[in-house]
Length: 99
Image 1 (cartoon, one colour):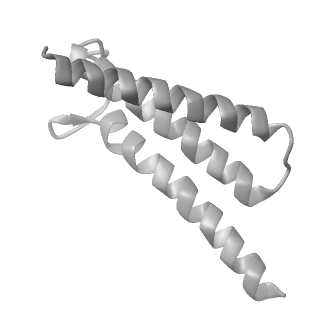
Image 2: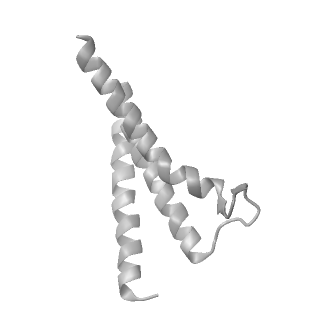
Image 3: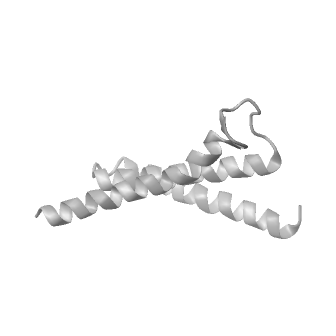
């Protein structure tokens, strides 16, 4: 593993940790559905980062449900943050056009 990969891994983990920490801190301060979905998107994005790094190091369970040659978690986890962001923006758009 070269220094570029180490910097990539450390930067993704550090920035994701800061974003997740701040999202969790703000979670208790707001009850807005759109913001809650944004927070969930940030947290699942960090979970996807951790999962991809564990997969890079070969530290993933071998007996997972798979679709073809890929595990189901590896398919769903990268898409889940975008699903939460789409839902958050849909709530914001619906709220904007309802008034």
